[in-house]
Image 1 (tube, rainbow, N blue to C red):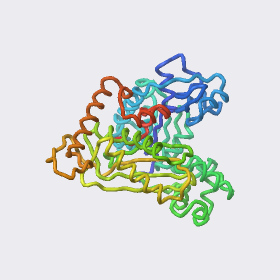
Image 2: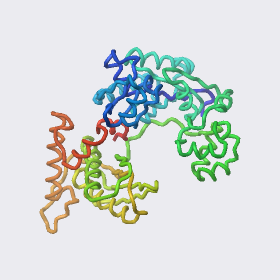
Image 3: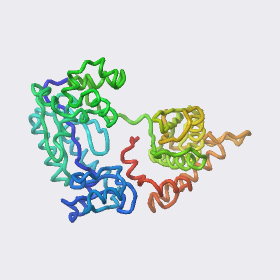
Image 4: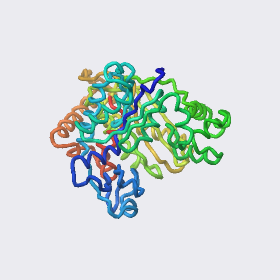
Length: 417
């Protein structure tokens, strides 16, 4: 680990809302919400002007309109988000090849090898911010520190549109007064548990014996957070490898599981996952389904197939069997989330046809059923490329799409192949 603040965390500010304000200058400086409406729906993202009134992502549109009377709702230019974010990442790549992209709008950089070209970390961060502002038109905040943990906290402190550099000799002084909720991995539940024991700041956490923190949060989480509070973080910036799995999930609130609901949600998720696999010429053998119950307990069930699959209907059927297995073995009652992931990936640019032997196994891609399903999917993929993603789809997935956030928005946050 370098002795200087050579790890940068770059994070685009209120990214989705900032893009909308970039594309429509009349929205700049005004409180806006991406998604939802004053009559309903869900806010997907909010500008800083809207956040000042308490508007946040995930808030019902009617509530957002109530807390911020001047709020403007926009539908969102989802096709532009990935394009603009990729342009920002290209700028980062001009400054160092050591980039670890962790979401569409944020990345870690190790600039230790770039100091002789561009100067100290603070200067590199300044170049980065100026170029993103001038060439893309978006605000970006940057934190620079000796560790990834501290660099990410520094970028949060720098928001909006700022730069914070933490020198090694100032690390503990910087961390001491900050709220523990700024730490990576401390959500609202963990924050409340820590507050109940008088732990409100990162300094409080650093002074608390690790064994006590582990009793509050569990061994693994407690041990990790105790180390991070002392800025003990050996993780290095690693270039993102090709994903080993692809998945999607859907929060349900609290719903009683029924065949119609499970089929609808899993059909929607399977279509999102399978279409992304096919777009990259990939398929996977291991299918995993996660079911979260209202009591916050989750069960996962998985199966490894003989052949890799990438067809929507086949993935839906496999996922349904796994989901009902988990539901039958779970604590019962309502469920709050369903998720699908496909792993054990391999290339599948073409499918080898099989002899029509009986009994037929529809799970095999080369069977009569498997080939027919792949042909249908290929036709729908072609129609979507020409006429848009909403032009055609399987009925359960289409029904689910009508009541949830746009798939384009969901997929921006999901792992890419």
